[in-house]
Amino acid sequence: MKAILIAEFCQNHNGRWDLVERMVAEAAEAGADYAKLQTIRSRELSHRSRFDKGEWYPDGRIKTIKRPYAAEKERLSNLDLSLEQEARFIELCRACGLKSMTTVFTRSGLRDISNLGYDALKIASYDCASYPLLRDVKALGKRLFVSTGATFDEEIERAAQILDGAEYDFLHCVTIYPTPLEEMHLNRMQWLRQFTPRVGFSDHSKPSETGLWASKAALALGASCVERHFTVLPASETRDGPVSITPAQLRELRAFAERPREERLALLQRDFPEWEVMLGQANRPLSEVELLNRDYYRGRFVSKIGDQLVYNWEESELFSDL
Image (cartoon, rainbow, N blue to C red):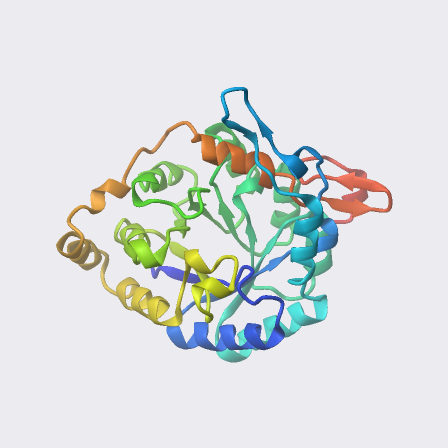
């Protein structure tokens, strides 16, 4: 099975269409299989007041991370892409020989893009346990990629039951940005294979410090796909730049992925003898950082239908048409 490489554009386009065009062209030339946007709508940002100032325990530990709503909404408003631009993105990918994908963050966002023609859809880690959203995306009959970071074992088991019969990959990831090599826990991929033979890896490591070792290790261990944040700008010029790879690094990863699996492992052992530090545990409690991120990002966006708010894990008759 050929390993799939996903170039995740995330917020690295800075809301500029000319950068989207350049990223598609360079991702295709560097050997990506999919180019991926994020269907983020700044208007769907959820205002939860406890994150405006943050909260701390008496001993000084963080209880709630600080992410003021007004500043975040203003930042995201500069990154919005229109439905027309998303449709153009799909056409551009097709013209360049790439498959198109987007991450959907709300059920209303899914409704908006359901007929645009995306080749695949992505569910972010914090929505792996949003079962109504999972049922919605499954009903569309598209190829699915579902990240499992910051998700409890029993939630993943339930997600797999819902997705049964769909064509999907589970993606192992660790929701620490950036992720240190010793926190990768790549053995988790083997645990995920009990649910689907297609198990990949979404890599949030910092290339300037740890190169491509985590992605290469995942490929050596038989990952069905690797997703990497992708940029054509210097790392300092975008929010996700520090955890993003360049076209040259994507090209290197493509060359590595094309090698037979046994050769990948031999090269990894030769060039990075301490690679097993990334294996970690197949089952473990979520770290304090992951729990804090889960607390904020799960529910970060919400469907706004008139004066009603519907979170992705809530059942609602407002989405009976999906």
